Every structure is written in C-alpha cells, then in structure tokens.
Length: 614
Image (tube, rainbow, N blue to C red; front, side, top):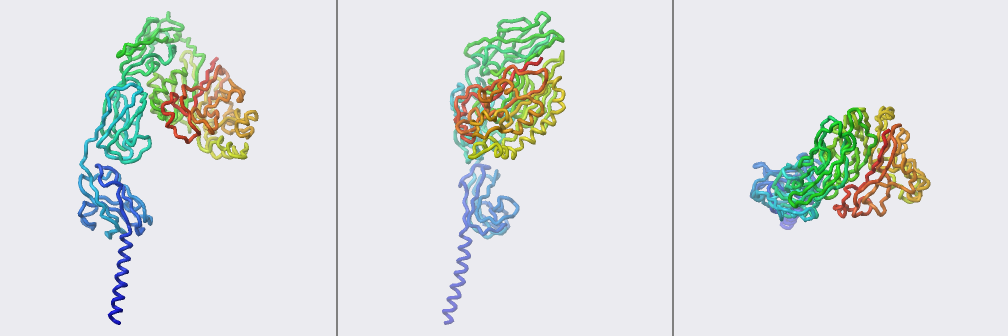
C-alpha cells in the first residue's frame, strides 16, 4: 500500500505541474507580419494571458532567451505603454517606428515584470533598408487622363501617402497638395503597404508642371518624387467680360487677371490687344500702369490669353473704372457666403474649381466657412485680393477691396474693408460658422414632432449662445451701422424662423411655425435677412442652401445666410449660387465618392447678395 500511495502522490504532483504548465502554454502571441521593412510598425497580438498588470511583450535578437542580461531591445506592457496598469488577458501592442536594424528577432509574451514565458518565441526578420522609389506611367498627361503612380521600398506605415504639388513647391501643409491618396489607394489610412500603385482618375489638373511626392506617415518627410506635366494651356476665359477694382487718376495701379483664364498653366501667356494706352499686361497676367486725368470713366480693354504650346488664343473684355482724385464712387457691392467643404478638398481639383466659381460669381467680398487661414491666403494670392490675416480657424474673409483690420471674436471673423479712400467709405463684415450638432430639421422628421420638440433639440446645441456672443461683440458696430454698414455672413447650421412658417409647414412634417432662436436673435439685433428682403415668400422661393449634393430624405433648408444693417444700404438682388452639380447622392452620411468629379466643390450652395450703398 505504501508503494501505491507513493505512486498516487507522485501522480497528483505531476498533474498539478502539468496543469500549471498547460495554463501557461495556453497563452498565444502572433505578429502582423513575419518580415518587416525598416521602421514598419510591429503589431503583437496576445491572447489568454494571466491578466497581470505587469505582463509584457519583449523583442530580443533571435536565439536570446529572455533574462535580465541582455535586456530586451523593445518592450511594452500589455496595455501598450511603459507604465503597468489594467488586467488585460487579450489585446495588441504596437511598436511604432521600432528602429530595428536588418536582422532576425523574436517576440516574447512574458509574465508579471519577469521572464516566465507565456508564449514565444515568435520569430521574424527586418529586411535591409531599400531606397523608396516613385514612378509614374507617363511623363505627360492631359487633364482628363488617369495618372498611375507606382511606389516601392516604402516604410509600410498605414498613413504613408502620395501627393501631387505644383513643380518646385516643397510639400508642407500650406498650401495643401492638389490631389492625394494614402498608399492603400483611398483617403482613409490603413494597411502596411510598402509596394503598390495608385490611380488618380480624371485628375483635373490645370496645364503646367507638377511633381508627385511619396511622403511618410501623414507628414512631409519626402521618400521619393517624380516630375511630370499636364499638357495644353488656357484655351479661353472663364467669363468673356469682367471688371477689376477701380483705379484713381495719377495713382499707380496694379492687378492680376491670370485667375480669370481657364486652367492657366506654364504654357499660358497674356497680352493686351486694344484699349487705353496707360495699361500694360505682362506675360504672367500682371496688369499695371497709371491712368491720367483724360482716362476718367469706364476703361475697356481687349485682353488675350494664349497657349504658347498649341498656339490657341482667346479674347475677353476687361473693364477698369477710373475715378478722379477725391471722386471715388463705389455705389454697389456684391457679398457672398460660401462654405468651402473642408477647404475645397472634398472634390478632385477642388481649389481650381473653387476659384472658377468665384470668378463666375463676380463678387467683391466673401465670408468663407470650413476654410482656413492657408486657404484664404491662397485664394487672395490667386485672385490678387486681400484676406483677413487675423481671422482664425474655419471662418475666413477675402475681399477684392483692401482689408484695413481684422480680428477673431468667438466663432466669428471680423474685417473692416475700405471701398474708397477719398471720400472714405468702409463696411464691416462678420462671418460665422455655428455649431453643427443637434440639427433641428432632423428632429422635425421624427414621428409626432412638434415645434416644441424641435426647439428642445435645437436648444441642446451651442448655436444660440454662440450667436448671442457674436451679436454682443457686434453691438458697437451695429450702433454705427448708419454710417458704416454692417454685414453678417455665415453657415448658421440652422433654419430661419422666416422660412418655417404656417404656410410652409407641409414641407417640415407639419410642425407649424418654429421660432428658431438663432435667426430670431439676429433679427432682434436689428439685422435684416437679405434673401428674405428680396424674396419674402418662402413658399414660392425657398432659397435652400443645404444641400447641394445630399438629397433623398435629407431635409432641405436655407442655413447659409447674409444679414445687413445700415440706413444707406438696400438689397438690389439676392441669389442662391452654384456652378454645375453633375451628381447628387443620398442623405448626409452617404458615401461622397460619386461626387468627386463634380464641378461645384461644396456640399452647400452659396448665397450672393447685391447691395446699393447710397
């Protein structure tokens, strides 16, 4: 019996040890690859660990068993950091930019700040550093061709990308690339692609010289580049008649008409065909000269754009008003509010399409939303205009006329714009982009919605406190509006009480009149809704600006508006403005891929109001 009892004791001890070992061996460790490019992210996925706060993943040279000497080359606790916390049994640890030299390595899953092996070794290798390369399938394209960019030897970061810039422009955030894609071929980072190709379909680039850049990890570290050209030059004008800012006799004048030509490129040249002798036009579209006392009035010039490569030419009529000293008379102004939908980056060749839309709109002052300082500066430089250099964030202002001062107050950009110096005539413009959350018209779509329930949802947003703050900051300017007119442009992200009336209730799920607090607050401050001043009936002329592309069940509303105050100011015309919208899609949240080649570069319509300044 002693022998039997001894055997049983031995067996029990063996089973305990076996089960303990089995518990340890139950843990697993896998890597996302077996071979890594230099500095590609290593993702170690572990499962069925014991859940100690100090369990960890370590990387060692292959053949080294973990111990205190030598130390691991890389390590992280199972929470992905170098500070122990949590009780994670399953998860993943990412070693970003690991800086491992070419060679063979092993990953280990280790227990509780020690060297008890839970899983491993998982062997892998880091390949020799290869020189990144970027090649295009051609060196010359038309604006409708597909550009295929093939890359190799990349670091394999999920956010490596290909961007196209004008030739001799070094990539950075200002200005942004003309077109771009991550190495997975989309605009959403993902994967660990080191070699592959990307197709830029129907590229839409203007004729000229360009460089494609292979760039690392959502930044501007250049891996490789390739020069190419878009053939052809400007074959005409966007409009065949246009007017630039007025001139003053005896005062040097300058402007640039390059942006008024269709797709100007490196083979585009400009010249003067006829007109008063005081004006000269340089090849690059810069116009200059000094009008004399005999040039007062409306000066008309025939100007020509030519493509030096093809020999094609086209003429347009440029008009420059000339005033005598002390006789400047700017009696009208065109104001625009324009949501640029992520700085015109949501459609292909968006910047050029945006510039062309401004040229066609023939406006003087623009309040931009979903913009940036960099975009406003680029627009001003392209058109030869001015921008509010002290505006911050997504609300920006650009103007044909000089901006004398600018500032940011809450969500509003402000600019003081000088229309004439002698006699002095100025305007003040504020531009806002209000909170987009808790959108009231969505609440109106719910079954049983009432004006009360809609306003309850509306009051969850920050729109009312935002506009109240802006109106408070405007108070001193509003008190002087009879001397210096005040304008308020914006994407208000909310409908107007002038639109949601008892006569329009059938269009709004029969909610009846809704006193939208934002528009009511603006009206109570003494500002006039310019569009409704021109079109008081919301049934016959809704004036909807949301949305230019989202249709179907998406509620349509007039959320982009221009207000004004000033006894000497009146509305002469108001319009909802868009260039061609070739494709529309379903409600907000639908994929926007189908509209990438639309001419109109925004998901909002713009609004243009013409004013008489008596």
